[in-house]
Structure formats: C-alpha cells, structure tokens
Amino acid sequence: MEIDKIDRMILNLLQQDAKLSNKQVAERVNKSVTPVYERIKKMEQSGLIKRYVTMLNNRHIDKTLVAFTTVQLKEHEHGMLKRFEKEIVKSSEVMECYHMTGTDDYMLKVLVKDMDEYQDFIVNRLAKLTNIGTVRSSFVMTEIKHETSFEL
Image 1 (cartoon, rainbow, N blue to C red):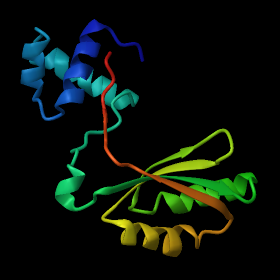
Image 2: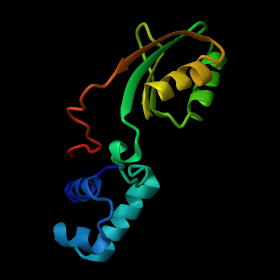
Image 3: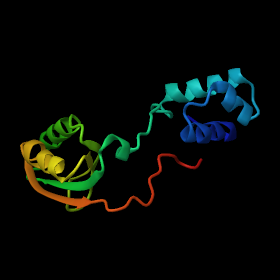
Image 4: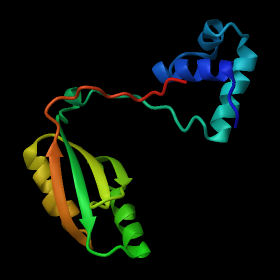
C-alpha cells in the first residue's frame, strides 16, 4: 500500500493518541470525516495499522524488573526453532522475542516484578523448554528512551 502525505499525517496522529476520534483526526489534517474514516479503514485492512493498544506504566502494575535475555539453542533444525518460538509466545513474562543473527539465537525482553519472579521464569519456564543451550541476562537499570511510534 502506498501512503501519501495525508496518510502520514493521520498515522503520526494515531501513533501519538489512538483514542482520537475520526472527527478529531479530520480536523487536524484539514479533511472531512468520511475520507479520513475511509483512509484509516484502508490502512487497517491492508495491515499497515496492525492494532490499537493501551500502553501501561509498568511501575503502576508492579512489573519493575526488565531483563534482556539471550538464548542460544543446542540444535538449529527448523522444527526445533519453531518449537521454541511456539512455546515462548505463550509466556506472559516475555514482552518481545526476536530471532537474531550472531552468537545468540533469540533475544527476549522479559518484564517481571522482581528478581525472585525472574528466577522462577528462568528455572521453571525457560529451562524446562527442550533444546535450551545457553541463557544470558542483562538487566535494565534506567530506561532512557522507549518509543512506540515512527516519524513518517
């Protein structure tokens, strides 16, 4: 899908506040409501807009330990990779998971309450998955930047 200047403006607005009504978006891009509604629907249907979410402050929900955990698998056969991925997406502690190049196979962003909860995740969840080789963890001391939008 090709996007034009108006689409970019709409997307920038929605990335900052997905709760904006079609009327509010239309006013900000100097268009009428119906064409803006149709543009947004088209972007949703094409998959350009994947979904709308509410961003929570993890401190308010008592999830203050953020770990970046790398996993190296023992075997790299396609089925083994897919099995790991299928299991890891079921874990509510894992906020993000990436298949990586280099030494490590996967990088996980894990969000938990504290070190005890992280240890429980490692010992009772991650280590119980088949084919786990090496696991390394780095813990966030201070979040400097966390963006969820792209400037278009």
